[in-house]
Length: 517
Image: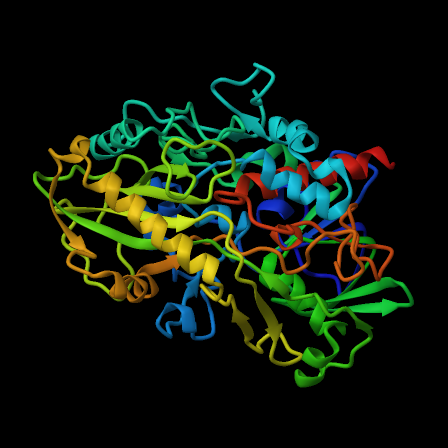
């Protein structure tokens, strides 16, 4: 493997833009064919901060040098606040930053994708082989979970906090089923979170896929510290990529380009290249070469209320995992109903609150987080100018629909019902937030309490309709040799964290690519 940026002009059979979760996986998988020259371009460097591999340290990673630390526009639905969006600028991407939760999603999440694309490859059954290929699950080999795959799926047992155990008991007493994890296809219920951890350490996608053996391949080059400024078009194909790196500008020629830069940077690169909504490009002083109005639109993200806070009756031991140890998914207003989840309540061992509230000292309180699984609010990302340094205008349009606000009230109500249940009695002294609020104040509390769950997606959605930018093969419809493989192509959110689904999408694309060669 080469990692130098010494040549001013380079050639590759396939260029992957972005070395995050999808890009790192694809670099490993698509370079298995020794005849295929693969170039991976990543803006960041190799992960080196030892805190990355300490699961309990993950909240402290945000804002460090390898975090893009994007900022949204002020959000009317969240008390006018600007939200920080942590995204990994490092080989391995956001898998080096996030909370390590591994949840495939609910089968109906993927049925929505199959219906949007008219292609059953994106259904639960269609994606199951990809999920299994990626996983090393302790129950793997049973026809449902994978065994021996690159990414470990840890099911915590002895290390689960006693507070989380009491939370699970409270949920079960209210009628929620006990689950063996969130990955069987049944998500409604209570269980410790499945985590991408092995031997007490985070496993990033770079750890799992870009092993020393993979990195030693002569046909794989990783170009670090480099960004693609724009794509140069020749008719219905990308002709070259204009790259800016530590040694200055370079030009790369490739037969096929795969964008894996994520839900913000993939549409931004397209827009800088003259592909996107004509009015947005005009306002950013970019000539519109291909008018694609939906690029940058359909932006979605999960929010979590942080939090329903309780003063502890006894000292809370520090988390031996990653602080948020259990997520209980359920229908709104009914702990006993099955099907596709609508709301979620999570158990935070630490006193997790938004910046609007003062957190008590660690060990003196704990939080129940609350949110909705399938928000209907839709936002956008757009460029403000033609250059890499021009900021992205990120507007997630949080809590802009009445349905989202109503479900958030029900999610908070569910958190408080669990939080006041007898099973948490030995830990609960009294409720700190939102204690004493009447119904008219609940929406104001929610607006101040919600924080991002770090799941932006949807800005280059795949679909069979004419407006969808990407087709079911993940090809950008306007060009023959450009594909998008990251969270931006998801038509809609999965019920929980999207990382497992993004990895399955990337593995599916690798299989499609190999089958066509």
